[in-house]
Image 1 (cartoon, helix red, strand yellow):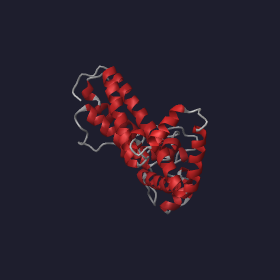
Image 2 (cartoon, helix red, strand yellow):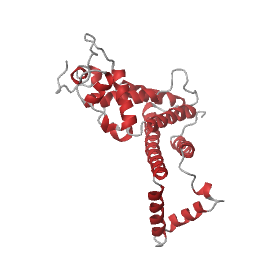
Image 3 (cartoon, helix red, strand yellow):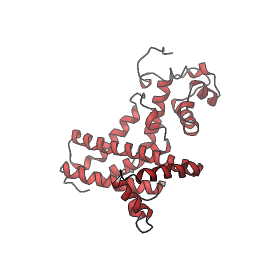
Image 4 (cartoon, helix red, strand yellow):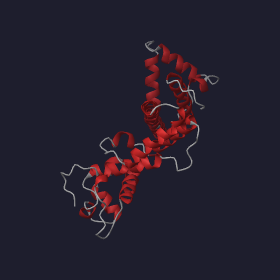
Amino acid sequence: MATEKDSRPIWSLPQPADRKPRYSREQIAGVALRIADTEGFDAVTMKRIAAELGAGTMTLYYYVRNKTDIVTLMQDAILADMLIPAGELPAAWRDAITAVARRSRQVLIAHPWSLTSLNDAQFGPNAMHHIEQSLAALAGTGLAAPARLELNAAVDAYVFGNALHSIESLSRARDARSDPAAAAAALAAGIALLETGEFPELSKLYAAASSSTESEAAGPPMTEDALAQQFERGLQALLDGLGGRLGITSPS
């Protein structure tokens, strides 16, 4: 059994195979993800995971050393879900990187706590698979590997930022539905600020959104579908710009 001071990533350690009951790392990660998805990341503890597995807490310590190992397994499981299944990655580079970006965003939104809770995770095999697949998706650009990494980093930043924005927007929408009085009070406070005249651009936006004929152009409701459409438009605009800046001449 590894000691608490062992700094090696969990991937460097062999999986225990000589005790009963036996639990795989995939099982442990799956339980941890279910707890986080239903009760929040703070509910993920060694004691709680062990209870869900039907094991003693000390038994769990035979498979993982600490919460850093748990966090690492959780992130690796999420990254596994981001991968496009073998044989399904489109041939054209724009279609391929769009598929990777779209799937990554969907997975992040399915685990809304993950964007802010997995910073301590150690780099794992599915992180490498994700990068490998992204580089493969961009192979058709004709760019050298460093330029593909740069392009992919820009797409990743957009995906993560958009996912965070979408998660926050959907959370606010849920809060407004569950507490309409608080939402109405917040809106009234915002309108009062607009009436000070200090926010002319926001005032124009609000006026346009209040018009039934212009509401769609000014900003659709923050529903999952509307946010997904916003993501798609932004992604294609980003790829247009990156393609031009990097001089990609290969077919899209």
